[in-house]
Length: 526
View 1 (cartoon, rainbow, N blue to C red):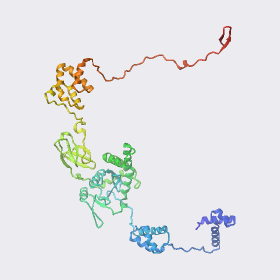
View 2 (tube, rainbow, N blue to C red):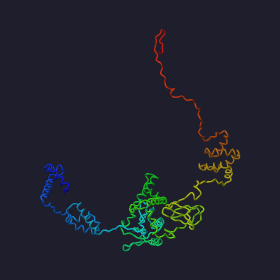
View 3 (cartoon, rainbow, N blue to C red):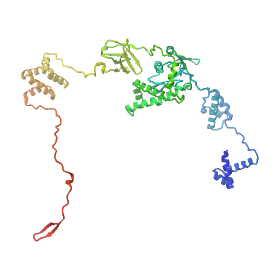
View 4 (cartoon, rainbow, N blue to C red):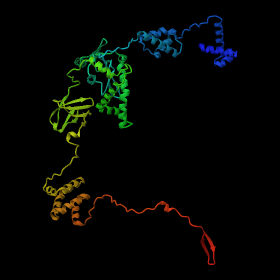
């Protein structure tokens, strides 16, 4: 049906031109529509009631009861595609689109009646702390929100284990400066020991942790993330505004084409630096005005902290206890079939080893002093720090150790003889041993100084036989002594007076004329 304004336009156009087709052309409609509007207007002007069209039933009304029963049996999750064949068999002859419209209507009706009724949450100061986990490409994000003041806490981790969750929760309490009355979370598997009659049974570790810090653990309803939407928003905010830029910075720093798995490994390899950035980010967002409370969360925390329970004087030890290892003669310890170095002065000492995510810490069991920290390596590998051994490892050197009388007599000549033996062995001269006696005889005949000079020349030119030494000795001192090329000879060239370019400009010659004489032709300048 046309609106009131459209009908008035049609009536005005008809009064202007006086024909149905002319008015239809002006208003962009058909002449039949113009006729119906004019007749209806005339009837209304005569005082007669406007006829009302009787409602026409939809073609899916024959199966509405069937669809309503199916939606109720499926608790609002029935699929129109699966239900359409049953409707066809029950007499439905309409289109698929109309049937989907019917199913959507019944779904909305079912949810209005059976849906979960909600009301806005009213948070009390010092009452609730809401926590949750998020993950992107293997980097896990722990998020917590103090409900009344809206103070946010975000940290990164390599996993979502119970020890990691409780450790970060304890760190959150330290940052807040107190403990709230209730810690609300979803039914995460690391803190859930079981479910009995829809009641969540917390793990014994969580019960001991909550008893030590004096708070009550609470779990939201199953499949109901809206009941803790306060922290759900923080998870998305932390991933988009903190974690993704952090991973992008690592990717750009290493290589623009680096894959996501390597970026994840880079972030997890330096979790302390990533958590330092997370702490700086939290300080920034907690110092800004919150859009919901129109107040600064850090300022509201100073008032809410008075209602928080004080922190316990003794902090609990979270996670598995450290294992002890004895440092071997190589100044290393073994953990998980891998080797980790410690300072060499600790050989034979007993140390404590703690594996915390991607890091391994080696501590003094009495004082807790950290002797060394290593990245966690795979079984069969080793993590060795040069600082534990006084510097980088030197290349292995096989020294010359003479044993026979001929070897001792020859090596007594000094470093030149040792260099000759080392070079001959590397060149594969297998007759070196039997020829040592002949070389000793040459040394006695020509003198040590002359013989040593011959050995040095033979070593320089790679001549390892006794006959080569004899030839060098026979040549005497007249042999050339090649030297390495020296530095380039730099000589300052003398300065000569220069001439300007204007002096090289070509000069035009004067014009000449030719004069005929008796002896021939002559050129005369004009």
